Amino acid sequence: MNKKVGLQPGSLIYTGIIDKNIDIPITQYFYNNQSFNKVHFIYKEDFKINLKKDFKTWINIEGIHNIDLIKKIGEKFKIDSLILEDLLNNSQRPKLEVRENFIFITLKMITHNKVNDKYECEQVSFILFKDLLLSFQEKSNNIFDNIKLRIENHIGIIADKNEDYLLYALIDRIVDNYFLITEDLEEKIQNLEIEISSNPTKKAFENILLQKKELLKIKKSIFPLRELVSKFSDIKVREFIKNDINIYLIDLQDHIIVINENIDFLFNRQNDLIQLYHSTLSNNMNEIMKVLAMISTIFIPLSFLAGVYGMNFQFMPELTWKYGYFIILIIMFIIFAGSILFFKKKKWW
Image (cartoon, rainbow, N blue to C red; front, side, top):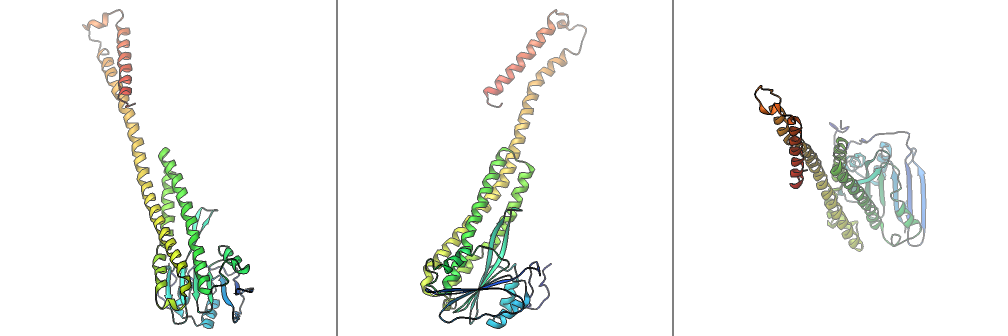
């Protein structure tokens, strides 16, 4: 049951599974085109953030289950309770919202858990101020390691750009990972097609239904991104995002369009797999019925002959033939062989 049912708007409740034993790492990145500094600590009860002049600032919080931490962040940066509520709601639909002093973006990071072969959707949120970027993850992972490496080693243009470019880079990294997920799904569908075409088992059909369920979950997480990125052109959003990253945002939008098209294509292939399963099953059944029908066709005349000469009427002339039994056997063999040759000529067998 939804934990938020019946509560007033802005109530701060984490809707995911809470594990109080999990630490919450907080990392502050201060960088420009000349230097870099990183401050890393585990949140206990204090939340001390010191901004540095002439430095771009990125604060990454890896854990959102601690309500007190979220409240302190809200108080320090003047974030309203409705945004904090969305931040804590791990089933929140991807979206972009604009406030007077920041923009809020939330979306889903999708990873493949190879242990149970499931696709896990983790909520990632960003709050972009004019001189600061806050990012929130449900748990620690290494998906942003490449971005961190580029900042620390001044690779590319990331150190020369502002926090809005960093926001783009982080979202782009999440979107790039979607391509890996869709490629993995496509490979699984291809393997299922081969399996179903040769051997449409009940287990294969169950796998189709499980994959369709996973694909629906992924589609629900990715589909709203097209609407999200379209809001980057909004006048109020442009107060926080500079024109010099327009070409990157257009590229990001193109990637999201391609991803959504891939998801729709895979979804249609999943439906085709279900039809293929039933069609292959039906064809196999028809083949079985065809063989049974041919066997019946062969044995009908043989049964007729056996039935006629099994009546033993007194005045049946053939009953007194010396070689009558062998003649009937030869006739039966000719009928049997002739039927087989006829079926093969017609390519029914």
